[in-house]
Length: 189
Image 1 (tube, rainbow, N blue to C red):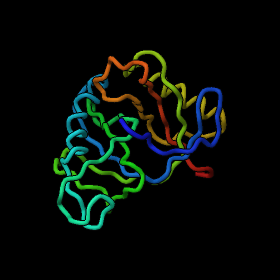
Image 2: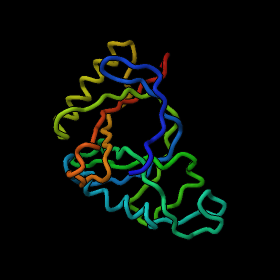
Image 3: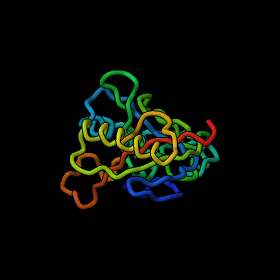
Image 4: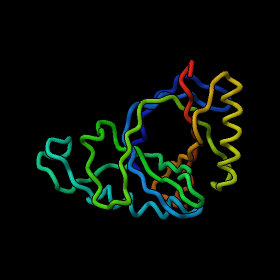
């Protein structure tokens, strides 16, 4: 993977960072797979979108002529979150800075969906140990307790962030890391 998704660290606590994530566009795929397999199943769809499985828009940052395929750099992390149904996970990544829903290349595969995400606050904690669903959910529960202990209010379910060259790049362990991230409700809400 190339660049990392943009964010600003607002405050560091002993167990997590409070971050500001600017407005961005996510490219996501819903997959029927276990937590352990979801990223690998989704990767082919996302890889296709990045490498020409898309249509440019006239006047976009990549192309002056509409409907041509363009390459899009993949940003880290690969994000995984609950899809709202048993066995369904949403897997995706933030498009590089500078894209919005009006300029992002349109996916040719209907399985790939673009979603606009407004700027937000998030709490992020490193995830140690094996990357299992059990470890992720336990880390998400701990993060929610830690966040509440600092007077902040979690908003929504946690998401799992995988930082690695590819989901199947097990041989590059030195570059792998994972985080659990939860949005923070704005003050007064």
